[in-house]
Every structure is written in C-alpha cells, then in structure tokens.
Length: 202
Ligand SMILES: Nc1ncnc2c1ncn2[C@@H]1O[C@H](COP(=O)(O)OP(=O)(O)OP(=O)(O)O)[C@@H](O)[C@H]1O
Image (cartoon, rainbow, N blue to C red; front, side, top):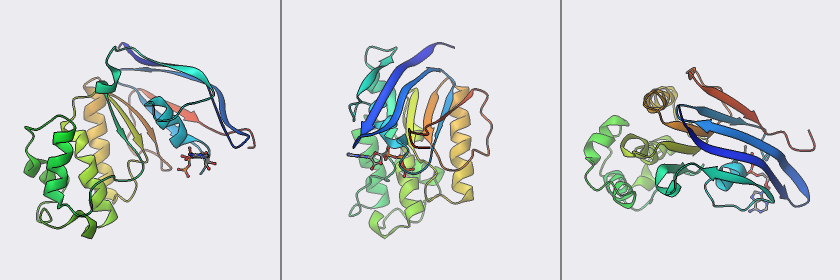
C-alpha cells in the first residue's frame, strides 16, 4: 500500500505549554491511526493542524497528492448540522456542498436509521440522531482519508457498531482513517497505529 501522508516533527504550544513536540508518523492506505490522550492533551489541535485549520509552531505535514483537500473528509467533534433544517434537508444540503448532488438522501437516512424522522427539524432530534445525520457523509464520500474527531460521540451501541462496520469497509477498500476516541475500538483494524499525546506535564 502506498503512502498518503507523512508528518514530521510537529510541535504545538498553547499558552506557554507544550502539547506535543517531535510528533511524527506516516499514514499508508488502509491504516487506522487512533490518537489517544486525556482531555486537553491536544488531540483536536493535532487533527485541525493536519487539515490546515490550525497553524503549529513547527514541523511539516506532507500529503502525497497534489489536490489533497479533495482527498479528505474532516469531521470535528460537533455534529455541524443546521438545527432549523429537517433531517432530510440537512442530508441533501450536506451532500450537495460536498459535491455529491446525485446521492439519494432517503437511502442515506435509511442507512443511518433515521427513516421516519426525516421531516423533523434537526434541532428537535437527539444528539445521537444529529450525529447520525452528520455521519452520512461517510457513506457517499469517495475521499480516501477520513479525519474524525470523536466520531462515536453520542452514538448508542448500534450506532457505534454501524460506524465501525463502515470503517472496516473503508479501510478494506484502501481508505485511511485518523481519529480520536476516548473509547477503545471493539473492531480490530488490520493496520492499526496508536498515538498517545501526553504533553509535557504528565
Ligand atoms: N484556540 C485556542 N487558543 C488557545 N488555546 C487553545 C485553543 N484551542 C485549544 N486550546 C488549548 O489547547 C489545549 C488542547 O486542546 P484540544 O482541544 O486540542 O484538546 P483535546 O485533546 O482534543 O481534548 P478533549 O479530549 O477534551 O477533546 C487545551 O488546553 C486548550 O485549552
């Protein structure tokens, strides 16, 4: 499998505290990189730096693709959906904004178990149901790299199993995942890397 991403000697300092230093890894197609660490360790900071949303104090992030922004899906720890739009409208809009106007939103809602709730404003759905709306991206995107901040947040055990099943399909097809999660995976990826951020004061 070929290399997607090479990260060398990243350094992050916030308010005089070193979150991480000399942080390096290489990501191949098919890899799952599970980033661990206590609250405030710097996991979200690292993910946001990898996708170009945060500038770090040192190091390099090299994507082995000229048009790398089109090659990834980034999902932050918030669901990021529009509360006033219905579930159906959210899924439709999200797919269009991502450049997948032809996907069937009904099929996506069925996949994530939201049929019957399609006409409710998303703001009236539970946190886990809102998360399921956001996660539909992972069923239509063709991007090989998924960068996911706490993707299991608010999901019940069925939702976690469904998502891990999707992860398995993605990596089996050569996709890669960088994710944070406070919970252990119940699925054992073939190519699992673990990275623990411990900071300078642990
Ligand atoms: N925009 C910012 N400006 C200054 N400090 C920040 C900013 N964002 C985060 N920090 C600080 O950086 C540290 C790391 O935050 P980060 O969100 O990366 O942690 P995390 O490991 O993802 O934590 P959690 O497990 O709670 O989600 C925290 O101490 C936080 O206060």
